[in-house]
Image 1 (cartoon, rainbow, N blue to C red):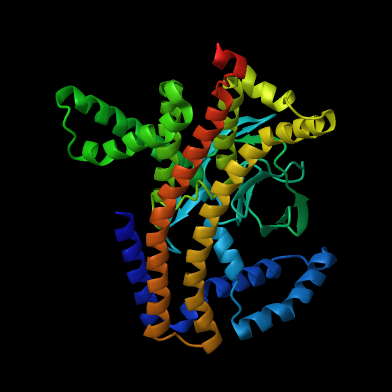
Image 2: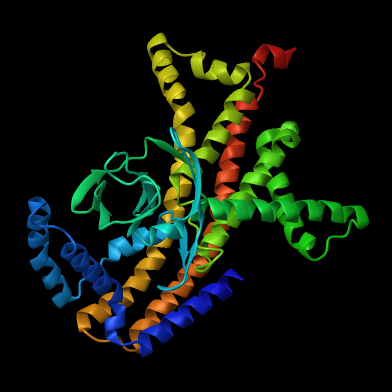
Amino acid sequence: MTTIYNLLFSLTLFAVLQFAPNHLLLAQHGNASAEQQNAHAGHNHAADPQMHTTANAHAPAAHEGEKKGDLDIGGMIMHHITDAHEYHMTPAWVIPLPCIVYHKEKGFDFFWSSVFHHGHQAHNGYVMEHGVLNYVDNSNFPSTGDVAIEGVHEGQVSYNGQHYPISRSSFYDFSITKVVFTMLLTAIIMLLLFPAIASGYKRSMVPSGVRGFFEPIIQFIRDDIAIPNLGDKYPKYLPYLLTVFFFIWFNNLLGLIPVFPGGGNVMGNIAVTATLAIITFLITNFSGNKDYWGHIFNPQGMPFAIKLLMVVIEALSIFIKPFALALRLFANITAGHIIILSFVAIIFIVANLAGTVPGFGVGILSGLFMLALNALELFVAILQAYIFCTLSAVFIGQAIEEHHHVGEAHH
């Protein structure tokens, strides 16, 4: 299904490139310039000389960018791999997500992300800057209702020619973003799928259909990951290993679907991977036996100076392991998305340099690379889940392993 979605996405992209006029390729850049001009036209430059100076300073660069047709490729890529409060299906069709905030003085507030109108409007004192909710904590700024603003830039909101600082310290954000929505969707899928698989064995022990697909994977995790690393104690930790494996795998697959409900770069969010790594860290250290802690803080059979150095290294390794676990997953998934988007950008870069719509050759070549990378990402999606699950099992196994001393073994 993921491959079909990506194939349809690529075919749609080819059609746009071949039949859309060249100015549509630069529409986003042109609209941004027009919005900046409209915003500056509405400002009181006499009352705000700094803003007037800034506008004049950027004006030549803006015109030069329009002449050359500069594209913000880095901004486009970062926009797609970072979290957001809405799904952009088309430039005109946006699916908003619910915002749930708790202000320390005003209490809870619920609203849809569409109230911000792409950053051109404030709602009850809240504004959106690059997909991040902020609050204007200033008595001169309207704190109720919808208010039209000139824009939000570099930690400040412009309203009636004045600049007001914004911050996130006055409220707690519990909003449903793309990452949160994707995680909730994955959780629902897992809660519906695996109890149904388990209940199917009550009717028949012969796997078929969905059970026939997932049973070899579950057995592989048990026989090739859990048992070799955890030994006889594997039943205690197998549920966690299965959960983390399928949670990472399903989220990675949903992240490869370019349209709603996919597109959420869950494992490309360091907070998510860090949370999973912390869970492994807690299970590992709370399960650690006396041999595990003795090996770290009281290694045997070495001079005192070497022993002291080993204690420092082993103590640091307690925290280095989960850090590497989180960073590896985050970096690999993020890199995959960036590379795919880079091949998409190549088409627009060629069009920008040539000043016209590129021929079929550029679109087809980039599209083939995109399809190949998407197929590779299908493998990477399950590979990264396997690596995280395996390393978690290794770390836990090291903590619960019982070392038999020479005297005990001889006895």
